[in-house]
Length: 298
Ligand code: HMG
Ligand code: MG
Image (cartoon, rainbow, N blue to C red; front, top):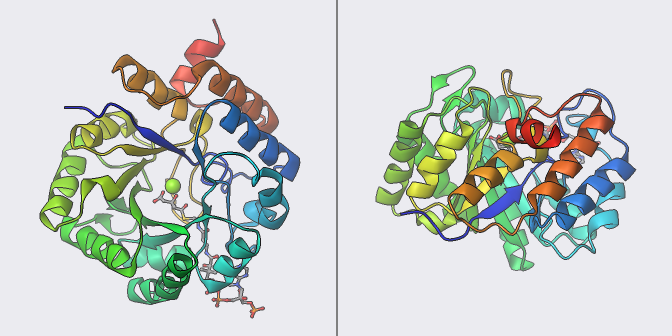
């Protein structure tokens, strides 16, 4: 069966903008997040407190966060280490996310650490965030395929998921960073995680749409009982440290499918599309989302 409701975890302002070539003004980012909230999204990842030289596009996190923090929505932020957590807590962030990798290659490229060193870096972050009563998400990148290592063995993914949960993460997000997953692989990973004792309600899915499989993968995950789905408005996104990463599953494509399935999301599709059309104008190129294109040219 399928779930009655799905929580959409909107990543457009973070994953969507971290990879932009040009600088997006802080004002535009703030307006984007306000408009996403107006469209009914209730979880909106706002930015990352990472090293500003590593991700210059999000170097304005200190300026941006206070402009959106009063919104009545959850505003998770990425924190790679204690320095990032300090910055996020200083601004009152209630939800934080660490981001691990299932592969050594990407741990090195994204975090400048081995996989185990990166887990050791996250441990005090998760500990302190939990002690301070914050909600902690643990991302797991390269959960399916890796640009350097190819297909990622399921047991390797399960091991890092367990490590993140044992550390105290409240939820996980299985990242298909480069968009190579297919539905059978999704089902196999979710089954293996269940067998390893990972409860499905702690799992979210994060599909990039490089190969056009994101919606099919999402449906496979929903059929498995997953109820948290990451998506980015207009299909923005990518990762500067993983070649071949393109945009995330577009939130509009997701809402269109869920609506057809009778699954409630609370999102106003017209307002969301207007937001993505407006954002596309700011960025100077059209949205790659098929649903945005279909419904904005009527
Ligand atoms: P490093 O160079 O190894 O840092 O980077 P370090 O720990 O050696 O520290 C060096 C200097 O950086 C120090 O300053 C620190 O204070 C400073 P110094 O003492 O030399 O003056 N520093 C910081 N400053 C501000 N904020 C911080 C911070 N940390 C250290 N948080 C580090 C290690 C993890 C910091 C770096 O690799 C980094 O920032 N990486 C972030 C990469 C990133 O954001 N990637 C994109 C997000 S992940 C993603 O997109 C995938 C996802 O969408 C899921 C999917 O699709 O799979 C989530
Ligand atoms: Mg991503």
